[in-house]
Length: 209
Image 1 (cartoon, rainbow, N blue to C red):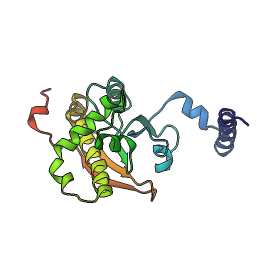
Image 2: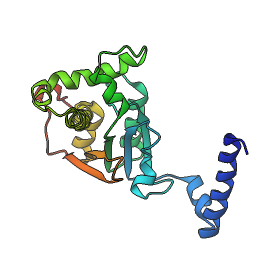
Image 3: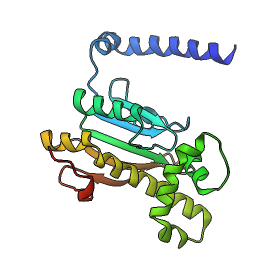
Image 4: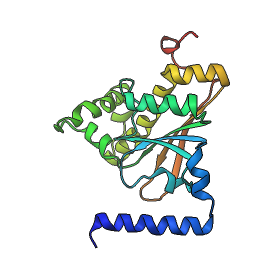
């Protein structure tokens, strides 16, 4: 069987098995979604948020890109964020990176990756911000791992800098922001940081509402 046809067959089997377990599953899912979480993750095929967290269709709203970035000129990301926060009223926004991330590794080099250069330049900014800490790590893998963590941290901070999050914090004291890193070797998620409406970014980023 051709690989693409195998996907269609897998879908049929999944739909049948799901309907057998819960005959109303698709009827209920068709009319409304009420996800509690927005997942901003890496596009890496090894890091599917629903499988890692044991959740089902309808429970997580998802946005994925190379190296789980929150970039303020990314209209795709901002549109997803606004819809999730203001329409779906998610309670949690998760930025989940992963160790051995190819996008982060690309940012650590001076290699020319073509159009990808424009994307990973944002990770190079993270390197510049944390240069002293990173250069103090003599082990290359350790430095790589730490940059993955710092990148997640900065993307959570970038979320907090948006007017979308700040206005939601003012209006409903939510959502909570979370930074996680997934270990490809272990299958375990490592929580790094949390932010709520009680936390503050640098005042230069704060909006008046």
